[in-house]
Length: 226
Image (cartoon, rainbow, N blue to C red; front, side, top):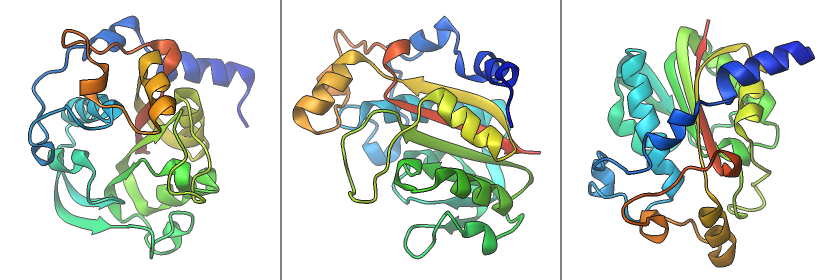
C-alpha cells in the first residue's frame, strides 16, 4: 500500500518533469532511425521523442549493450539502439504477458514492451509477470498512449498518464529510473479529427513542435529490477 506521502514523493521525484525537459527536442535533431529512412516526417510524432529519450537513457545507464533482450514487436525503432547477444521475441500470440512469468524466470537483462500496455486487460498483473522474467539488476522499457483513438479493438482497454505508469511499475517492485512524455493540443485535435496518428509533417511550424506538459498523449518509462 502507498501512503499519500509516498504518492507525492513518487510524483515529485519521477513524474513531475522539469521545464527544461519539454524544450530539449522541440526542434528535432537529424533522425537516427535507419528503418524510417532517417526521416521523422511520416511517423506518429510521440514516437520521435520516445526514441530520442531511449537513446539518451541507454547511454546514461550504460545499457546500450546487454546479454539477453526480450521484446514484443519487431517494428520497434528502439531495437536499433540496443545490442544484445541473444534476443527473444515475445509477440502475442502465442505469448501472453499476463502469464509470461510462468515461462521465464530471471531470464532477461532487458525487457522492451512498447505500445502494448493499452492492449492488456490487466496491466498490473502483466507488469508483475514481466518483473519475474527479468534478472536482478535488469531493466524494462515501456511506452504507452495516454490519449488515443480506438485501435486493434476489441483488444484495446485504455491508456496511462506518467503518474499512472509510475505507480504501476512501483507496485510491481521496480525502481523507476526515468519517465518521459510528449503531447500537445494540436496533436490531440488532429488525432480525433482524422482518426489517424499525426506525424512531424502535420505538426511542425518552422521546424518546431511544442511539447505541452498539460496535454500529454504518450509517456514512457525506464525501470530496474533490484
